[in-house]
Amino acid sequence: MINDITLGEIPIQRIHDNFLSKSGIRLSILRLDLIHPEISGNKWFKLKYNLECARNEGRDSLLSFGGPWSNHLHALAYAGQYFDFSTIGLVRGELPYPLNACLQDAKNAGMELVPVSRADYKNKDNPEFAEYLKRQFGNVFLIPEGGANKAGVKGCKEIINLYPQVFDLVCIACGTGTTLAGMASTSQIPLLGFQVLKGKGYIRRQVNTLMQQYQLSASCDWNVCDDFHFGGYAKVNDEFLQFLTEFEQRHGLPLEPVYSGKMLFGLYQLFKKRDFFPQNYSILAIHGGGLQGARGFL
Ligand SMILES: *Cc1c(COP(=O)(O)O)cnc(C)c1O
Picture 1 (cartoon, rainbow, N blue to C red):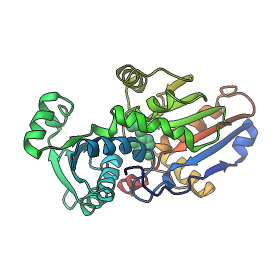
Picture 2: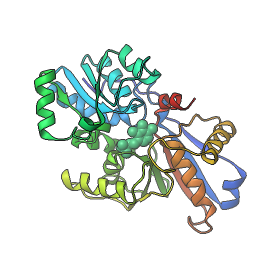
Picture 3: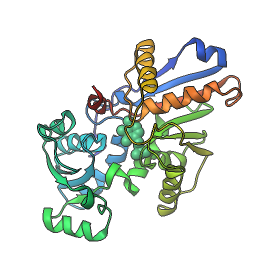
Picture 4: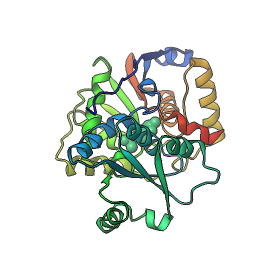
């Protein structure tokens, strides 16, 4: 069964520093990066019901989309290998030669890598493109980029079961909003998403769209902070990278600059605003894994 995967311990790490004690905020990090050595972080939750659907429909090949450092394709390749599916990854743009570490891992796990021009990639969600892909690759099970579909949202509802319900706020980084949509439809604790790409209100709209599409309603207050993306997806600056290095060293915790790093930087900026969070506020920030992607920044 698809649920039969050995999940690692998922510790909750309390963060202590002068800055937090001065502002009277309790911060803990859910180490979802430790859930599995290869199928990292929230990606397992977005994939599990997709794999189950594919199996129920009798399809033995999974096809999905992503950029050349995609955590989603990386996790999909391993999940496919683990559960005996063949996998096809449609990679945006040209395949780097030699392959980068992410794509090399995916290939080693058995994924067939197919480059897709940026122009075609823009059409990846069109029904005609899906038909074309089915003609080209046979009876494949299509999973949208980032696992952003009904099965993906369903899996993310389960993330709230990984921690005790004792926090005042739970924070996550958002790329497609799938994780936030799933969690916002089950959590009783308010949620704050940190948008990692540019576009005011983009994730807020995506989450609303996903929830409408799948007829979900919010079970808690949720909001999105879209001020800390540094100009776009995977964009960084020196101040941010320095914050990450210091944070990693001080707390012995690995971060990556695309998702969880931006969330933590954003949180610390909000901590600096007096009275943004009430005294003695207790926050859980979810480390979404994806550390393989940090290799793209070395
Ligand atoms: C994919 C990913 C996210 C974003 O999840 P969405 O459901 O697409 O919003 C956050 N953190 C990490 C580490 C990821 O790999």
